[in-house]
Structures are given as C-alpha cells and as structure tokens.
Amino acid sequence: MEQIIEVNIGASPVPKSCKINSPKLKEPMFKRFVEDLNKDRKKDMTFFYNNLDTLEIKYIPPYKGICYDAAAQYSMDKNIIEVVCGDRVDTFIDHELLHMASSTVDEEGNIYSGFIQARGELGIGYGLDEGYTSLLDDRYFLNRTEEKPQRNQETYCVVKYIAKLVEEFVGQDKMENLYFSANLLELIEFLAPYTSVEQSTQFIHDIDEILIGFEQKRFKRFFLCLRKFAECSRFMAEAWYARVTEGYIDGKLSDEEYKACLEDIKKMLSNRLKLIHFPIKSKSNSKYYKVIKSRVDKKLMEHYKQLMLDELVKEGKIPNTEEAKQEEYKKLDKRLYKMYGKRKDTIDTN
Ligand SMILES: [Zn+2]
Image (cartoon, rainbow, N blue to C red; front, side, top):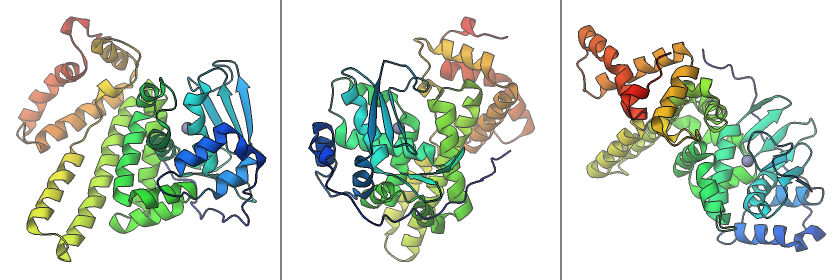
C-alpha cells in the first residue's frame, strides 16, 4: 500500500530582514564556512545570517545522546547543533551548518529546511534533504579533515546519488538556490510539467522511505527500499524522456542527439540498487544474504522475486510464458544468492 501523503507543501516564508552583522562571523568555524561555500558563486545566505546570532553549539561526549551512529545533528526548531567533542568536530560541523544555513521556521511553527517541510511529527523531504546536504558537503568542504572523504563516502550514499540525479535535471544553480531558500514547493512545480504534481510529491516521499530503510539500516524495510529506488530511477527517466522528446519535437535535438539521450534514459531505467551497497558491517557477502533471509519479511521477499522475474522478461532473458517463469522462479533463490552471497553452503535456509 502506498503511503498517504499527509503534508501540504507550501511556500517557504520570505524573511523580512537579514542580520548580517553577527560578531560570531569572526569565529574561524563560521568564517571559513561562508568563504568556502561562496567561493565560486554567491549563495543566498539569508537563513544562515538570521540563524547565526541565536545558534547554539553543544559539545557532547562521543556517541551520547545522538540518534543511531550520527556524530552530529541539527535541531531546526531549537537552532542547536549537537556535535561530539574532540578533533572530529571539523569532519561533521559543515554538514550541520548547511542544515542551519537552509532552515527557517514560520510564525505557525512550520519548519522549512532545505527540501524538508515539517510540522511536529509530520514531514516530507528528509531523504532528498540529507542527500543534497551531503552532496554540498562533498562539493565545498570535503578536504576539511583526513577522515572526511572516506566518512562521506559511507554516509547517505544512496540518497546522495538520487539528489545528484535531481540536480542534473534541475541544474546546479537553481537546485542550490532552492535548497538555501528551503523551497520544496518550487522544486515540485519544476518537476511537475514533465511528470505530475502527484508523481513528483510521491517521488520526494519515496526518497524519504529510502532514507529510513537504507541509511538507517532497518533490515525489514530493505526490499521496500530496493523497489523505491527502482521507482525513483523510473521517475527521473520519465522526466528526462518527457523533456528530451519535447526538445526533439521542437527541433532542438537532432536525430542523433535524441537517440543518444534515449540510450542514457534506458541506462537510468535499468539502474538497480544492489544489495552489496547495503551498509551492513560485515566482510562477507554471504553474511548479507543470511541477514536478509532471516530478517526480511517473507512477503517482501516474494515481491522481490516477482520484480526480478518481470525484469528478466523485460530484458528478454527469459520468454514471456508461464512455464519459463515458473522454471526461473525456482532458480531465483540461487540467483539472489549469486548476486549477494559467495558460497552456497553458507545460505541460511531458516
Ligand atoms: Zn544531515
């Protein structure tokens, strides 16, 4: 069952004034953030300056009081960054400052933060927002510390990948502007003519599902994640298809260019999230498979097998007949294992 979208997406509030004279700007941490971020092109720093005066940074002992294995977090409603103390601060602080620089709260208490819109427990856009924040962190602050490149590669990698796809479609300048003005509404309005408002909103929701299931390592939601990832790829492919076809009809693309675009779209469509990307801290692939087999919902497993069958038919690898499908179905466990496991005798059949 698809999730019901419960949040009305609205326009982010336009700030009345911008307090650019905070004495905090003299602190090296903030100074270098502003400088590095605006190196190539000036960003909209309104929310950053407005939040800076009241921003509180709380240093806490390693891994105390912060959700799962995060090393820092930003509370949008309280304007507080909590970060583990020690020399790792430099690795994490810019990511949190990006959240802060893209956040504002309106008079009714609605939060607008990058691509998030939230009120209390209800919210949308967390997945795209984390993905894009990580992408910007890579783009502007990757070399802050020695451990940062490795660390950034390991965190939010899937939502970051999707955020990159969105940026390629929207354009870097526009996407950055939308992020720093917390304008999810305009992003949806930009995507809608190529798809629809409903599909675009669902797309944003799907990335939220991926954030929860994949990045936060909730195994039971894993197969849902695989499906959502495929749906996100399909959404972007459809948007590109609508755009390039329009360009072709308008004579902006030659036959050759159009053909090349269609090839790229085909690749995007066949893009699948591999179990191997799943960040289980284990050395052996067969262990992944064991974990998945033992912890994943049987129904989802079944669903995934059906998806694989459809895929094989679509790719022309098996004929579209009941017999062929049934025969392949019997082999699917082996195929799943081949993709994710190493030795047959290690499969956990419980
Ligand atoms: Zn974050």
